[in-house]
Length: 435
Image (cartoon, rainbow, N blue to C red; front, side, top):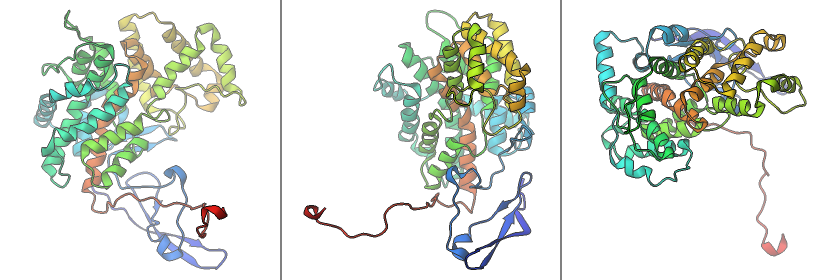
């Protein structure tokens, strides 16, 4: 749905030193705060803005995802994430993000079939994996093999051809789960499992990860449902670091496979995609339920570097809407598996404290989606090194949708941030014997 971004409102900036004033126009979105259009600021004033991390800068127009962190709202194309997670499945959400509307029955069938039939990868990629050490981090492998896809699929790298963009988008959504499962199997020294067209997206991923040739693998519907919800809840999250990386790489005209590989590299950073892995590391450090009170006290102490990971969120100042869905799924998984694991016991005790302790309530440190997803993945049997890989599988849909939106935006330009230079001013070269 097109939105008129024009606004009659202007903002005037006055240079207190010279008295010169500069009027800047504003822009309106369909919801959310207005923004100041500063594209003419340098031409009018000779000055740039300074915004490290771009936390107060709108870098693009987008109709995909809206977040209101203060109210705990996350919308995909106008649909609340809670409703999508409850009533939809991952591929329907993928279609929504890509196409802008929910599919009808025939569109859904065509899309599901197309993704399912694209899940196999070129057999030479199996040989490609052998170039990695067995103890290589799965994200290191993903950076390499996803970028290498452009060497296999030359017929879908022309970013100016809508048909090729569509084919590349579907290939990425279909093949990255296969590559992720191969990375996991490679780390175990187990044979790769080929995808099965009879299974759903989530079921197929679990099968490729956990099936072995020596026995039949039975799909646990509770685990498949939880995995599908994890994929939905991580599908897109506005202009985060990895999404911005994909857009920045794409702005140069890079092929889609290279752009998604860049997003994976950005996601690998512990400040971004490693949050649920950090939760498990924290639980390991706590060690036992009897130590929880000590660590909660450490978290309250401003002079102690210890942090409680999985509580609160940088964006959501009230609560993470995804966590409500994930909490229910987490408890279903633990009940279904009946697992006995000291780390999971610590996690459940921490959850109880966070929901009733006044310190957590006052600070709005509610368990977030990373807290619950980490527990679920641990219970399923995934090592922590795979957590960010699973995040990448889900987020590929958002990256692809954002990349497509960027390519179609007529106002899109190559990304080129400016800087506030603080180095030496012009100076002359001195011969070495005079230095």
